[in-house]
Amino acid sequence: MKQDQLKAWQPDQFDRFVRILEQNQLNHAYLFSGFFGSLEMAQFLAKSLFCTDKVGVLPCEKCRNCKLIEQEEFPDVTLIKPVNQVIKTERIRELVAQFSQAGIESQQQVFIIEQAEKMHPNAANSLLKVIEEPQSEVYIFFLTSDEEKILPTIRSRTQIFHFNKQEEKLIHQLEQAGLVKKKATFLAQFSQSRAEAEKLVDQASFWTLVDESERLLTWLLAKKKESYLQVAKLASLADDKEKQDQVLRILEVLCGQDLLQVRIRQILQDLLEARKMWQANVSFQNAMEYLVLKEM
Image 1 (cartoon, rainbow, N blue to C red):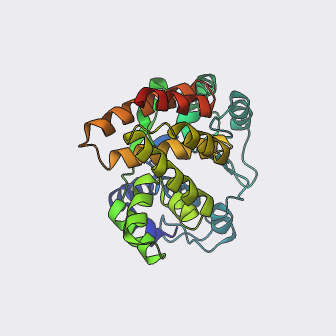
Image 2: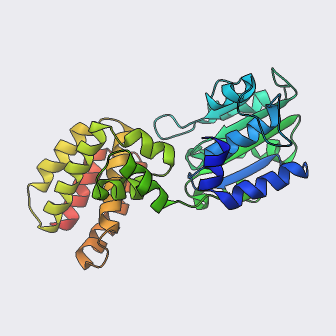
């Protein structure tokens, strides 16, 4: 995402960070809450540190360093993502070991932790000392869709910025990409980031999960026993943690579209219980069968 696009999506935060850069007051640790432009903002700030041809404080977007950061290939900007819905302690310990070293290209290093709420508590705790007493020119950006799931000890040691969802802009963009209004609206409600929406817009397997999840919800409302068969079908389609999380989120969005119905509110409450079971390592199929059992 280029600067003009980032400014269009998050004008207030863009202007705030330009002022921070102009005053040379970039902090060592930030918590970005909300995924709409947060990764792009972290990359923009990384570019501002490493750009070799800046215009004032703004990165040029054209030099080697800017291009490598955009492509997630710059050696001193490390992007950490969950694997199977978790960021393991070992990965963060490897990271901490890097903090005491100078960067490859310069003295500075940037670490961007996506979906930081999925860090194991031990992993999060191992970062506390680094945040309080950085041993080198280290900048850490924690990105999350839900800051309440971040350890309070991390929240209290970072500067928090909110990146609110720009739903109407996203719907318009998705319609321009070829989606009909209903699908564009659903995907905008579902997506936690612009990048996720762009990834899913033409992904046939995702829209299959949407169709089958809609069918399950319809049968749950009608208290059809065929719901158990539909759960089995969804379990076979959602064969990894990412897809299972997508099914749960799809059902949450579908319920959220019709909260005036008492039955829908009850299903949503039971769905959240099923999610907790799944997060506690109950199998996806068993958690979903629990949901069906509650609705019969």
